[in-house]
Length: 361
Ligand SMILES: [Zn+2]
Image 1 (cartoon, rainbow, N blue to C red):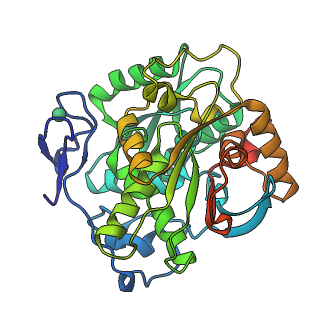
Image 2 (spheres, rainbow, N blue to C red):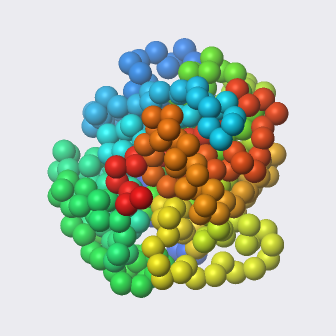
């Protein structure tokens, strides 16, 4: 139903003008309607707004944009395999999360929201703050104390108000939820508008590939906002007949935090170690949309892969040796190439999600 949000757990509908951010049953919400992509509609300049016909914005003509997007899809060789890399670390704030922030912040403006709460380990905080600043939205960001200071400084520089919460990632999310009782919880971990923003990456990629479906996509997965955005886009394309099959979605996690594998093997994910984690951006013990992520992996014939730190370091160096300065979280996806060799390597794509300049390694 157009203009509504739907609870996938209990089926309750919410008019989107009410700005609900979760169902009364506690579940996240999805859009209650779908989009039908038509390539002839993708005729504008090469940027996020090129895909406005499949974005949940009522007034894309009034949307704030940096005219960003169309990051390079670059053929290179990493760890002995020829692969394409999608260079999303070149977006405005240095991370793919700008795609989600673009739609979510513009949706907040359409809904008349003036301030919002977000909890983030870093990159999402920077993206949300960067898009909020020029349009005068107040960003209240809850972050775990002790996370990479470059990301904290970046969000702060954009004017976001930061709340550093001691304890775990879950403690941080709880503090944000409490604060959201008097604000809007613009959580990249569960907000459907954010996912409809991150889906622009697969539209760009498919246009760059001339609509040839890749064999596999390697995607680092924390809360899954990149993978789920890609999954949304792929389903839209298949329903519209633009593609006849899915690429394998390979969900990559680190050995320190692998809730996807843990869930499949029927165990609880252990608490994170106290020491800093190399791939901190994907260290999310309880991704709210875990079952959706696993469904996407399963329906595309993909895999969940867990990579150790020494492979991430090796991948980081291999990428840098090819001129790609990325953060360890992105290198985790590169590292997975050691474990899985796609049948058609020229059409394997690794999504490079975050810039190396923000990381401490
Ligand atoms: Zn519900």
